[in-house]
Amino acid sequence: MKVPLFDMQAELAPLRGELDRAIARVLDSGTLVLGAEVEGFERDFAAATGTAHAVGTSSGTDALLLALMALGVGPGDEVVTTPLTFIATASGAARLGARVVFADVDEALCLDPQRALAACGARTRAIVTVHLHGHPAALPAAAPCDVVEDASHAHGGVRPRARAATYSFFPTKNLGAVGDAGAIVTADAALADRARLLRQHGMRPKYEHLALGGNFRLDALQAAVLRVKLRHLAAATAARRAHAERYRALFSAAALPPEVRMPPHHDEHAYHQFCLRAPRREALRAHLAAAGVGTEVYYPQPLHTAPVFAALGYRAGSMPAAERAAAELIALPIHPALPPDAQAYVVEQVARFYRA
Image (cartoon, rainbow, N blue to C red; front, side):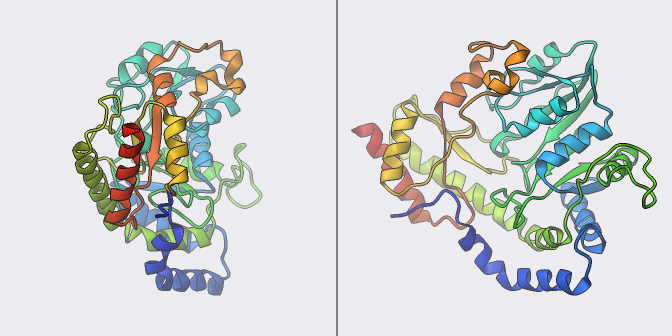
C-alpha cells in the first residue's frame, strides 16, 4: 500500500469547483495584490481565530518578521524562543539585528514557559513561542515583554492569546494556500495598523514613505483560495483529530515497546502532525519508506546547534530536551483524506519493525 505523508490531490478534489470559481473571480477582477479579496479573507480569518484584526502577508516567514518589526524589535534587543522549530521562528529576530536566545522545551515539546522567563534579561523585547505540531503551547505568565505565538501548525486549534500570533499558509499546512501566504492576527488595532503600513514599504499614501518596511503583501489569488478552504477548516480539523484518536487506539493495541511514545493529547490540538518518539528512528523511516509509507522529521537539528547560530555560543547538550526530541521524532501521515485502512497499515508496519 502507498500511504503518502500528504495527499494534496485528495484534499483539493472535493473543493475544485469552489476553488475554480474563486480563482476566476480574482482574474476577472483585475486586482491581483491586496484589494477586496485580501480584505475579505482578513475579515474571515480574524473571525475564525476569535481576534479583532488579521493582516495577510506573503508567507509565514514574513508574518513572523513583520510582527517583530511592528513590535519594534531591532539591534541590541533579545528575543527568546525555542530551538525545536523551523528556522523562520528565530531568523526574523536575527534579520532585525536582535540576539536570539534559546530556551529548552517542555513535555509537549513547546517552549517551556518557565525556562523562557528564566532566559529573559534587561534587553529582552519579545518571546516567540510555537504551537509545535499543533499542540497548544503554554504561554509564560506575566512575561516582562511582548509574546508572539507562532501558530503555523495550529490552524483550527488553539485560539490566540498573546499580543500577536502568526500563521503560515504553506500548501501542506492545515489551512494551506496554493503557494506561499501567511497572516498576523492581533487584538491590538495600533499593532495591526503598523503591520499594514510596514508590509507595503512603509508607504501611506502611495509614494509617501513613513517608515522602512518591505514587500510582505498577500496576493489576491491566495486570499481567494484561503477563503474557500477556511470554510472547510473545521471539518478538516475534526478529521485530523479523529485520525489521531484512531492512531492512539491502534498503537495501544499493537503492544509496542514502552520507548515508542505517542504525542501528548490536548483538546485544542490541531494535529498538523502526529509524531511518534521512536528509538532507531532512521532505521524505522527506511523500513516505512520501503513499505510505501511517507514520513518526515520535524525537526532534525535543534536551532541552537545550527551553524548559522554558532556565534551565539550554544553547544550540544545545552538544550537536552529539544535534542532528545530531535533525535527521536517521526511524523506519520495524518492529512484529512487519510483512509482508516491506510492508518491500520501504517501502525502494522511500525509494529512489524519493532517486532523484528
